[in-house]
Image 1 (tube, rainbow, N blue to C red):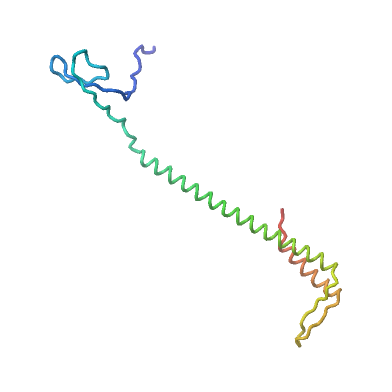
Image 2 (cartoon, rainbow, N blue to C red):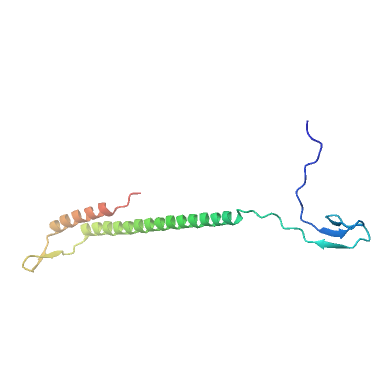
Length: 145
């Protein structure tokens, strides 16, 4: 069977009165004193402080700083990965363009021999050697998406 008594209400911060009754006793109440009684208002005591509030706040701040640090590291890694991928894309594009130009150009290519003389390479030799070198470089720098 349920109790018919009301649940006690938590203390409410409000005005607190202090006065001396007819018998000389000091009375404290949240109700105003009877008419004609000289009273003083008293500041209500502050609510009980959470003894763990400072520690809880410090833990929350530490967690926040940790998450911010982890986020900064992740952002930094992502930015580096994007920059590296962009460098590889650009290098691949340059190599691909050079490979295409190599097949179409009529530029003379030469090398320096052991005697220090310039030797012009035949088109077939130049294309074959340069194309193989460019193919190796393209494969090494190609970004897989």
